[in-house]
Structures are given as structure tokens and as C-alpha cells.
Length: 187
Image (cartoon, rainbow, N blue to C red):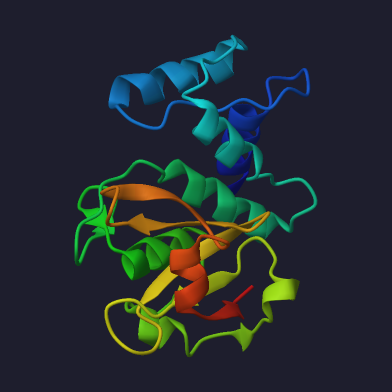
């Protein structure tokens, strides 16, 4: 299963010519069409420039197997609905539910809430962030109340309540800069 996810992820990002491509992120039929494209080697349509940029920054190259698996699972959740208390693709996700689900797929059990997840792992300074690290923000209450999965190049996957979907956030966005709480490495 782990190998299939990494192969699927690599197939989504690279079409064999070294050209980075993005698969559509919403709709079951678009997802199935993307899988068919990978299997047949056809060129997949690019969703839009924002998602191309975002997907191109999520690369398993140079990452540990576990980190690459986390990134693959997290990126496959892009576009899933945001639901307070949600913890699965069938339900939708809140931030800590997304993190718990993604890490569970890699065999790592984390607590359910962002504040308790923050107690796990070792602290990482912002300059040392690596893909797969967890980034925390103070949002609706003091302390670690929002969490995302760092994917590199100053970006992270999280639940965006303003967009209503799992999306890619920017660590340099003033909203997140003002609310940054810390980062942890669990891997």
C-alpha cells in the first residue's frame, strides 16, 4: 500500500518527461480521469496556475520514504471539505483531524486535537522546517489551535475555513505570520 501511494504521487507530479503537472483536485470523475491518465501515460490537464505552483512544491524527491508518503497522502486530500470535528475523507476534515488522518496512513498515531498534537515530537525552528513537519498557529483560542503539514518552500497543507476546503497555505501570508505558534517534527 505504501509503495502504491508513493508511485501514485510520483505519477501525479511527473509524466515521465520531467515536466511537473497537477491533477484536478475536485470531483470523483476528475479524480478517476487523473488515475486513468497515470495508468495510460496520457498527459493530465492542469487544474489552474495556483494548483500547478502548489503541486510543484510538493515533491517526494530527496525525502524519506515516510515523509514522501505523508506528502502524498496530504496532497491527495486537497479539495476535501472542511468540517468542524471531521477526521476522514468521508466526513471532511478539521485541521487536527486532517493531520491525524494523514499521519495515521504512515503508521503514526497522533492525538486528536491541535493543542495535544503540539505536545508530541521535538520543536523545530522556522529556518529548519522540513516537509512533513507540523506547523502550528494561534487562531480561535490561545496556544496551538490550528495545525498544518509543512510541504516545503514556505507552504503547508491545512484546512482553510475561509475557502471551505483542504488547501495550501503560505507561511509568509500576514495572517499566518502574526499567528505562528511553533513547529514540531514527529518523524
